[in-house]
Structures are given as C-alpha cells and as structure tokens.
Image 1: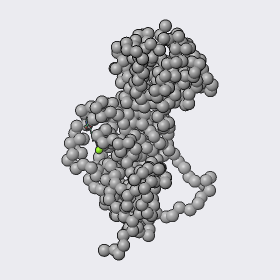
Image 2: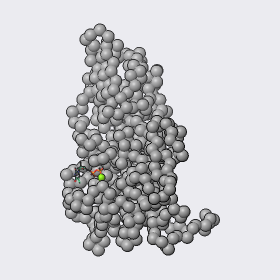
Image 3: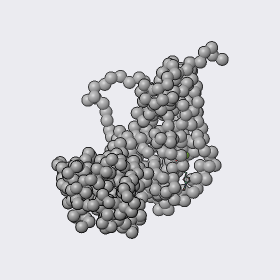
Image 4: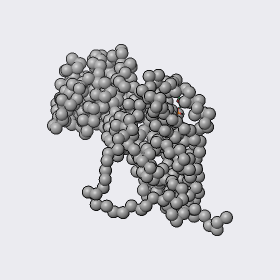
Length: 466
Ligand code: TYD
Ligand code: MG
C-alpha cells in the first residue's frame, strides 16, 4: 500500500480544484460543494488510448498556410432532427455530449441511432446489461423502408464495460466508426483512483475519449446525467471540453421531447429537434406545430403565445389569463411565473392608455408549463392575453408576440428578434407582432410568416380583438 494517498478537493458543481476543503466555491459561489477525491496514481506520461509503443508524435508549430485541410464529409444520420441540431450531421472526430434527466430517453435515442446508422457502431453501456439493451433494441421499430442497402448494413456492437483502458483495447481491435458511451458518469480510468462519477474521473475519462476522437477521427457520443437543478451532473468543465452539447428535455408525463443545442463548435446553437416517445421508440416530429395545434382546437379567450429567451435559446410560451368582475371588495391580482409588480404595471398601462376598466376586475395570470419568465419580451403577450380574456374574444390561432411594453403603452424592441421569429416559424406560427423598432436590419422576406411591426399596444388590440 502506498505510504500516502494524494488527494485533492473538487467542487462537485463546477470542477474547481483546491488543495484544502472550502465552504464556498470561489469559482461558482456554490456552498458546501467540495468533496475529497483521490488523485494518486498520476502517471508521469499522459495516458493515451493506444496501447504502449504506438504513441503519437508530439505536434510541432506549423505556419497556418501550410496546414493541409480537406473538409471531411459529415456523417449524415437517418435522423433528420439530430442532423439539424448537430448543424448538418456528425463531424468526424467530434465529441458530442447529450444531457438529460433520467428516463427522458437518452439511451433510447442513441441506441436508435446505433441501429440505424450505416456504420460500424460500438455502444458502450455502463448502466445496463447486454440483455437489457437487446430488449430495448427489440422494442425499437426500425423503419421498414430503411434506405440502407445490405452492402452497407449497419453493424452495431454492444459492450458492457466501465474501465476506459479495457474499452480502448476493444476499440483497437474492433475499430468502430462511431462510439457511443452510456454514460460518462459510469466510466472510470485506472489512472485515477477516485470513484466513477466524481469530478476528477469524469474529467479524465472525457479527456481520454477526447484524445481518442481527435486522433482516430471517430466521432464519440457521450451520455451525461443531469441533476435536479437541470445542470449537467459533474463538472461544468465537461461542457468546455466537448465540441457539442445537446440537451434532451421534456416532461416525463408527456410524450414530447425536445433536443436542444446548447453549444456547438460546428453549427448554430439556435436549433432544436422534436421527438415523440412512442412504445416503439422515438419518432421524429417534422412539423412541430402539431404539438401546439392539437391543444388549441377550442380557441379559448385569455390565451396568447409569447416568445422568451432562455439563456440564448428562444422558446415560445403560453400565457393564460382570467379576468372576471371582482365580487368581494378589493380585486385580486395573482400571477404565477410572471413578476406580480410587472403585471400591475401592465394592468395600469391597459387601464390608462387603453381605457380598460381593469380596476374592478380580478386578474389571474399564469405562465403555462411551470415556467418563470423574466424576459420583458413576453409583455405584449401578457397584455393581449388579459384583453382577450376581458373581452372574451379569442386571439386568432397561429399568432404570437414579441415585444416589451413601456409605460406609455409603446412597444419596445427586444433582443435577438431573428431567433425568436425563426423559432416561431419553426413551431408553425403564421404571424408575429413585433416592435416597429425591431425591423431595422431585419430581413423580413427571409421568413415565411407574416411579421407585423407595431408601435403601440392599442394597435395590436385593434387588429386582433376589437
Ligand atoms: P431511456 O432511454 O432509458 O432514458 P435515459 O437513458 O434518458 O434514462 O428511456 C426510458 C423511457 O422511455 C422509459 O420510461 C420507457 C420509455 N420507452 C418508450 O416509451 N418506448 C420505447 O420504445 C422505449 C425503448 C422506451
Ligand atoms: Mg439510460
């Protein structure tokens, strides 16, 4: 037994390393996030995925003009939604992290790709047994008219192993063309002693897989778990190391799933793919408006759709209000998912500038789906939802809004209007009301939907409600 184990403290939230324990992480300000991890066995040489004697030559500086570059074609997957979020297929040698809550369908998605891809795929699982994976594979319905000819028939290999050194031995023999690791939190390298799933393990295993991907040109998919707070478990560091981060999200009680690009070195991050979880696996939803439209058959009053930005991701969100004459004394104001003070301000604007006698009404406002919206671009949707309920006139279908409302009832410009419009268009909306001040530099002809530039809330109400 070694005399003394070398240990270090790691913030389990962001991966910050410290020689001693700390109550608060100086990097991410999280309290109580430090845990001791054994980092002994640090070999002098950097571990490599190749077996001994096949070390690669250390790279030398090279003038950029002399660097040979032939664009390698991307691997186009049979899954159009995945191709889209990746920015047009899988880039050779890239490493993609797919995060999501347990049970959301990460393993199903990647197994489906493994089965459908016309490549030699190695699916490594540290979570399930071979039999379990086979059972899942049998559940997944493969398209009957699969365009894969027998000559390029997909080959899918399953390996249940968690030690990366063993995994690389098999990789050297098998030489897969695509590698899937389910999940990175179950992997462990023998170069580090701490338990699988700890910050240093996750980081080192990812680093090894990264070297493998870059040196061999084989694309690697990593599955990563997500904590309750919605961040990728383990270090944030992971997100910096990989080329692309995708997030698989959705309500487990509903069948729809959204695959979002959070980071992409090879494409845009404003992409999203939509799937439906069926008994026979995940089905791509090519026309996402079917999700929104199915719930909107009855055209209720008081419902409007606004756009918000969540981080840098645009999202369309439903605002519901109920306005009814107050029966007892002081009218009630209640707001879920939206700032109550801001609601009062918007009510005052509607009262003063629009002449709506809301002072005698109970107003209940709710942002659907349990979201909390802070983006002021939702203001216009909130106003329209309130007026729609007050007048009991439904807003026409396929209509959405993006605008901040000022004290004078004027509609102000919002950030990243193009992304919002693009998202609305993708989700099947046909018209959007935006601020007149947002039209500068906006190529309206680029979009297939009708864009209405407006200056005042009254204008929108006139157009849609009275
Ligand atoms: P899974 O891929 O195991 O989730 P993750 O890897 O993200 O934890 O998804 C499991 C869920 O998907 C499970 O609740 C059952 C459901 N499912 C279907 O509805 N249809 C299917 O064809 C398959 C394989 C799973
Ligand atoms: Mg899984």
